[in-house]
Length: 188
Image 1 (cartoon, one colour):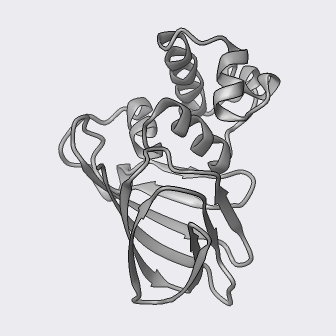
Image 2 (spheres, rainbow, N blue to C red):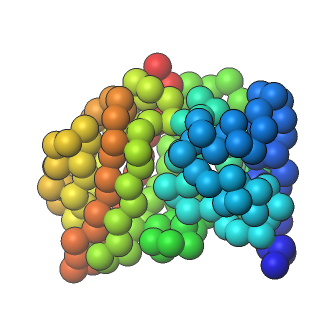
């Protein structure tokens, strides 16, 4: 069944455009992203909504951040984005909520993202979308177990962790409250 969500429809179309622009077949992309051909086909037809992990794999294959990909399908091109207009995306698998705080402008090297991970939820990324991507995670509330390259950091409200992405990362909200954080991303 095709999604009626306008963001899902624009995202599906953009993913199909990217694959075509790279000259890749569904099989080529499946190998590069380690995602099944049938999943990619259903995604490009907006029959399924992507999870954070799936988007992470596709972004890695295309060499762009998730924020860059989502900015390409957002409708706002101004240097200002009001709080009520900031795009919000929810991972259907984990319940993770991602708010794009920064205005979606191409060519800028930094951006801010707000994340909220429900109690008990986890999101794992096989690798960075852009190797060497610098991130600053500032935990606003709750607790967060963040694994970066095999090392787990146990963060409490107010803690800030700066790191570069080269390998696997995993986010886990142990509770008792959801983990809410601001993530600053800086392209290498």
